[in-house]
Image 1: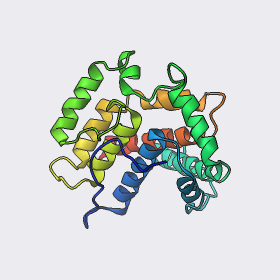
Image 2: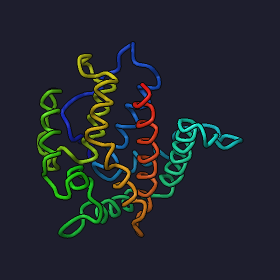
Image 3: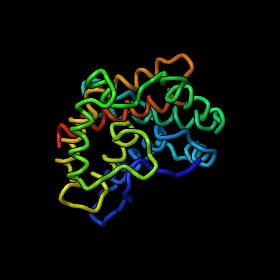
Image 4: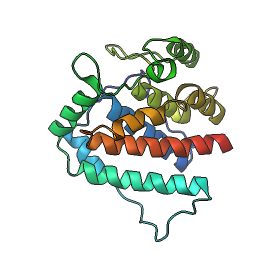
Length: 223
């Protein structure tokens, strides 16, 4: 398993980056990796050994949407950490292949155009490519997946949080990109994984993604 990424750029932390933004960028990076290819044994071990926040004694106030979303994210992370400790690299690879590659077509599509337009390679991909050109980003050499793949979109969000170009790496651009290219379909894609009868590790990965995207949606709406 390689550490290949779908886009050509390097994460750059600056002294002005907040701990929250660095954590957001890291989680987008993890999701990009998990949905780009199955985790190898080293990544599974690192997830399984990741520190956990203490469990809250009380459930979050359901009237406080942000607190409830944050609590759901913490719980989703704990489930993925536990699952990673029970999953081998071979099992994760088999599951990734069955769900996202398949024979002829995948069981679950990870492409935005499929959910936004009903077909692959449709207008949403054209709009996305216009944004990527504006950002100066391009698909990495040897990558066959189109740019509207979930992994690529997570990589772009990571760049807009922790990239080194202040003209585009800011919250207004994060909000605009998230709303244009992720908000309308990611829950549907995550639900498709969660509901798949043979999803195990990736059910928890999708659960983490769905919980994180809800935190992002609320935070970006208020920022």
